Length: 302
Length: 287
Image 1 (cartoon, chains in turn brown, green):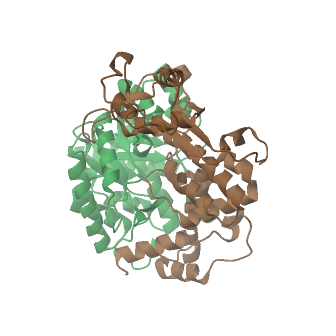
Image 2 (tube, helix red, strand yellow):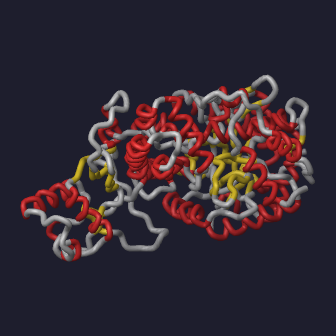
């Protein structure tokens, strides 16, 4: 018997090989006439004991298809607007290429799409404008996942603004994008307009749902400073790229306060936790809560 | 076995897995369920709805944590980040024990998100037990290992699955979460007698039992958790209780999830089988 680490590396490499045959036909991936590689078949015979009902190859294939069904379903679910904009074939080619290049590095399937914006930006299956737009769009859609599970910090009371150490609420994600990809959500097909940059904030609202708005570029700059943490004086210590009007600053701060964005980091070690805020049962949205629900379901979806 | 060091001294009866389609019913109707099992990884987050729901459940119910991503059979060891997140959740839930699967699932930080079978070798048993000892020491909470459903065996296995389970749990001194449906599924897929498995498991280590339904295909069975429990699985359950005594029992239903009432009714069927098993057990003890 091989050493354990060698066996696990070889088994894992085999189940990450591209899907073939009837397993592939059970997915949305572009069909392929190619059969399994000789490498896959040899590895199956080498590792797996044949059984009464299933051959070594069929046994390894059950794990192989289970891996792909699960990751494809999960990652595709997280990028619905990208799917609509890219069209089915391009989208699934992209998902397959992405999972081949960027296997999951997290304990949770929620983080599967973490490297999608970077991957799309360099994927050869798209032309240059689409790379820019789709990468920006993927960044927005991944932010929706990030706000879902980010921490809640205690908002800073207005009378403490001048003296407290300030920070930006962790579930506020700031995005600087080269194209206005936030418009894509309302499009039926991909119809790019002018490529002016946009600054966005995506955050978790009071009902735990997703909210987003566009920001002024200087507002974004100040929020980035707030993200780094410090006193009010620290936030304004350096001149901004454009000197904002006092009325602008006043309006921005009022909006940030109203949304609970200005907050203080809790004290304590890594094991401590903040109590979650309470909400009425009837107002709660349960979607996305059971991403890791069952390890068995993907394989049952024949 | 009722309460023991493997259950943190806590005795629980029948429970069900906490699943999203039932949240509304549970939080508004507050049904009389003994306990809920949660999937740890769904709540190993910094904030948001998941923790909010969990805190509301914890106000009303006992919760036991069940994980799908510890991967104690990994040759490369267990993720430190995973353990820290898990420990933080343990403090939140005050779970009497933590369970996960006797499997591996990642290599060099790349995750399969699957419960992959461990080769049944002495080397793998030693490595897995070493990982488990470290986990249990870190968590400071009793640990129970669940036997997984499998769809194949490795060439070169040096023992049976049940011998491997017992060997690892003895070496690491951890408890067992005995999934009788998984035993049945693996017995069909790998061709062994499921009763021999149940009869071999060290009864004093069994902290919890899982029951579930599965899907039968032409040449194999898949552990889908989307059907009622079938009679052969109930019979394995009865035999397990006969050997182990009163053990916390949990019904898993993860796919095509029916109403809360239907799931709870299915789970409560275990009480009839348990009573019959305890009667047989009493007969043995009297004899």
